[in-house]
Image (cartoon, rainbow, N blue to C red; front, side, top):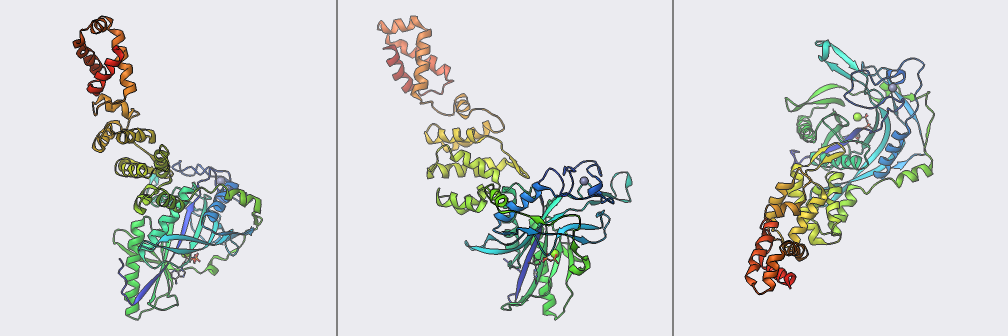
Length: 486
Ligand code: ADP
Ligand code: MG
Ligand code: ZN
């Protein structure tokens, strides 16, 4: 669905800034912990004090390289850091260390769903390293009415992933961001949090007459902080730019901002060209040399990516594309589901039952926080519940009831099912043991039975039923008692 008048086509390209989940900052050993007292995680390097020298964080480089490999990028053996100069209170050095004409990786791609059951490929222009700025805080703490600068975030490692202008709709753009985010989260290099700004995106949009091969003038919408707002901002811009084109109005390339209250974009500033940043090679850092063996070793640490996982779940186990999508929405959800699967691997009926149960019951209360997801039960408990269903011990409906009893606890579903008398216990081995126990504990009655008073069997059945809180299968108990009493 799109509001583009048919005579215009939208062209969209995204720039994503992702904070790397390193323990320390990009060029110093300050911790990257958040929520600390302002200006406590700082040192001469990230404060930009004269004479302090940056030292590159190897962990950040490894995370960047793994991302590049996951996005099918070429990893450049030699790349160069550059100073991007601008003045802003949250930038203590007066420049940001970035990469400019020689980034560490280029020419990648990402597959996104095309909305019609197929896929389309979106080019990744480049990925380069950067450092984050600090944060200006307005009207907080004792400085109410004034603005203060917190430099704890200054120097946090970032990668910027620049996408080709291959996207054609708001849906495309959101699909791209979701696919990109799930890859970063699967790699455990980023927590994917748009609201808190650890995964930020700038949206570039232009329109052109449908059929034209040239690009129109673009606008850039900065830091839109949710998928929903990305979608809205793009729809809004497409309509606005189409209107301008209809009216024959031209405009200069510029930067805009999403105004959530007004549900529209507003003019922010005329776009700086790269000349305005006076980029030059960073004199305090040598070129970054990534040798092949190290890159090859990192390639081995790239886990199965969500797309591959979905393909495996659909083709090998016969799950629907929709089920596979939901069950891989977060790597930890995928891991949970696969632990349930592992109880009966390569059994499509089990896969289907497990998928349904996890999707309808477990995911309703699973909570994702960045890289972790908390589940109300363990995979083991779900396996037990579903095994009871497979064995015919309880019905599908009872499985949901049973789940209601066990969730949030470590209780054994089998035990709880018995306690609650949810089904007949028909496990002969278990029942035979109980029968034996009852017979052993009541020698007088056993003797009477053996002496011909067969009516005492009722007494034994009653004892076994008591032990199982009424959940034993009485006919089976009867047979077993006859056997035990000989
Ligand atoms: P800058 O930092 O100046 O915005 P970048 O090269 O980092 O430049 O990013 C440009 C982004 O804009 C890319 O994601 C690219 O796909 C996108 N883009 C470039 N030209 C157009 C256009 N005409 N319409 C829409 N998006 C565009
Ligand atoms: Mg930009
Ligand atoms: Zn520091």
